[in-house]
Length: 197
Image (tube, rainbow, N blue to C red; front, side):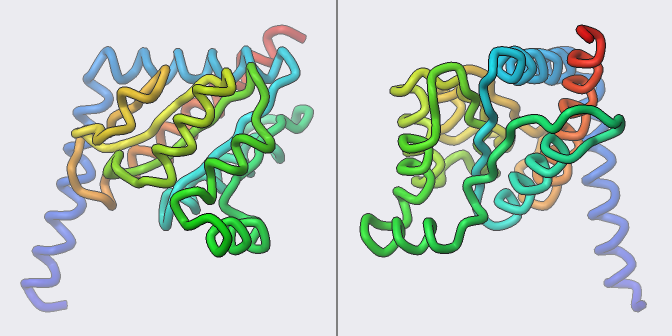
């Protein structure tokens, strides 16, 4: 690798390190992870489910989180009801074709979401129209709304009951914070549910 490439690597690693350190030192950020885990656990204990959505890398994160909940994270336990709204190509293409891409998650929330469920929406910018519409639909139907976004929060932070803002404005670093935060939340949920058995 030439020096320019090495410099790029060092800068990316340093930006990641700095964002994680900032998150770990922020008492509100740390406490919010506990609040999100508690909200999800409360829904699951009451027979609710978690709906997840995002675009691009955030879609992959939504699927990753659903997998941790439905399968297992750190411990063997009963599967937890989680649905990634990013995976059904027939549904996504039908809604996108018939209504427009900005409706692909909104219509799924309206069809699948019930009062007491949770919508976990991921958008690094906080400005994705399909995410904003999904959050509005969730609010309208009595779902708990949780958002993962970047430092600025965009338009989604005000639409969320709980909004986790990664302390960065760089998309790849925001996504790294999001999946790490999700892992912490999954671990807390497992601890909460096993403590009640």
